Amino acid sequence: MADTLTITDNRTGRQYEIPIEDGTIRAMDLRQIKVDAGEFGMMTYDPAFMNTAACRSGITFIDGDQGVLLYRGYPIEQLAEHSDFLETAYLILCGELPTEAQLEDWTREVMHHTMLHENLKKFLEGFRYDAHPMGMFLSAVGALSTFYPDAKNVFDAGSRRLQMIRLIAKVPGIAAYAYRHTIGRPYVLPDNDLSYTGNFLNMLFKMTELRYKPHPVIERALDVLFILHADHEQNCSTASMRNIGSSQVDPYSALAGAAAALYGPLHGGANEAVLRMLAEIGSKEQIPAFIKRVKSGEGRLMGFGHRVYKSYDPRAKIIKRMADLVFEVTGKNPLLETALELERIALEDDYFVSRRLYPNVDFYSGLIYQAIGFPLDLFPVLFAIPRTAGWMAQWEEMLTDPEQKIARPRQIYVGSPPREYVSRDKRR
Ligand code: CMC
Image 1: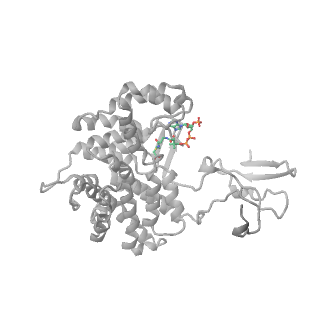
Image 2: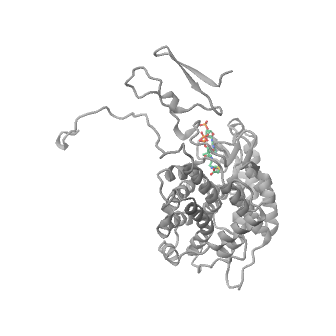
């Protein structure tokens, strides 16, 4: 059996044999299909990339029907149980789990770069007191490109590695400073003797104590949440990172664009939107009326549905289990009951069942974040911090892939045919 696809063009009667590789045909192979020799040739039309692979990637695998998520081949459940965020970031970036010595070096390198330039603090101070932390975050990440002009050397492997370390090291500080700015508290310097997430909690919550000691359960929960958010193959923000990066701009500028894509309520802003939705629903009694409104097209059930997962998001399963551990320390989030009941009703409702809409990662993560004490508008930033590892890995993979070029989709032009300019006095 030949691995080819035979296409008959019924306009001309001509046949074409197109190679199939990995269950995929190359869109460029269709270009030869034309009626007249002078024609452009056939294209594919795929708004929102519903069925188009834009790259070959060895980083993350998702089986949306089976609810499987692997980073570099390792199941997310095993990483969430045994790994920590920095080790997982190393795995995603370098392709293999680090040895003991490699992990020690990696951790030291990252923690060595946690300080932020004083001018970046001044930059953050320029924001209004009520600025959304995600707006501050993405602006500050973009501003970092002006601090590190060496980052322009995107084809220098050493420079790329340095920027990866800098970014992973500095994003928690930017997030923490953005938060403290909005509540008018002084910025806290990093404590590099703490873990990555322990230090993040320190920079967020330290008050007058000489040394901040993170609660081990909260620190671990945050670490697991960071592992779960570290990468998710070609989603909207990652595709943005690759697209922007394909122009060969520095990674800080590209990452600012990726973070902007993440900010939207259909993507990383969904965790914030879920909590606002739960608060708006108010009580279990209001759920049927809310579901009715969603079904009639008035808004969406936030934290439900996914382009790829057509079964329960494996990350949501892990988070749901972890919530109990966190709530033992923090006390139960009062919105939990509403969320559980909402999930129960939705999973029995034919509207959601027939569309295969299940809870995604954002449905329960916000409940934990809120119980820990994070304000709602910090939630998308909490997504962006760990996703920085994934964005950087995907950026590196794109730059080192000889098949990649500047991203440039085609269009089907549906505008006016050529026409003569009309002078202002003659326009109607
Ligand atoms: N509530 C109600 N209906 C929904 C929902 C929802 N959350 N999601 C999808 N649908 C319906 C949609 O109206 C459509 O129905 P119909 O066929 O009758 O028109 C059908 O399901 C298919 O939806 P779609 O919009 O074509 O699906 P998509 O793959 O383009 O969208 C999504 C995926 C995640 C944007 C969407 O499910 C959604 O808006 N969910 C709510 C926002 C959310 O939770 N986002 C976080 C995603 S996971 C984390 C991340 O990647 O950032």
